[in-house]
Image (cartoon, rainbow, N blue to C red; front, side, top):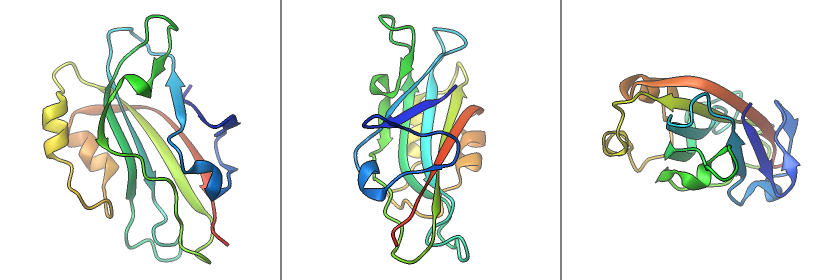
Amino acid sequence: MLMVSYGGQDVVLGNTLAVADTQREPNVSFLPDNPADKYTLMLVDPDAPSRRDPKFRQWRHWVKTNISMDSSTGLTSVRNGQTLTSYNGPSPPAGSGPHRYVFLLYKQSPNSDAGMLSTNMSENRSMFKAAQFADQARLQLVGANYFFAENK
């Protein structure tokens, strides 16, 4: 299970959070299958700039890689990872309706390396293709979670 929380507010498969409450990096943790495995986490907005006209889909809000288990807790926390794209909180345009913000958790293959992953990361956050990036980096999707946020 991919556990995500913003200051005590849990992300629970499609609940709605206030934009103001999501501007700081969330706490993210999960139970790994194998303590030696490493993971990559992405946060994307598939509704940019709006669900009716998602011409900038997917907007890349955050990417962390080489996430490993914390031996003191038995959980894996993103604090242990390397940042490829710094956290950028949700900022849906006013009046664009609710946006989905999707956390994607991938298990890295044993021969994945952060250097290779970072070279495939452009400065432009728009039109990111998480599935294509994962295929190129040999990542396996193992978890997801999402929430809605809207700027009325």
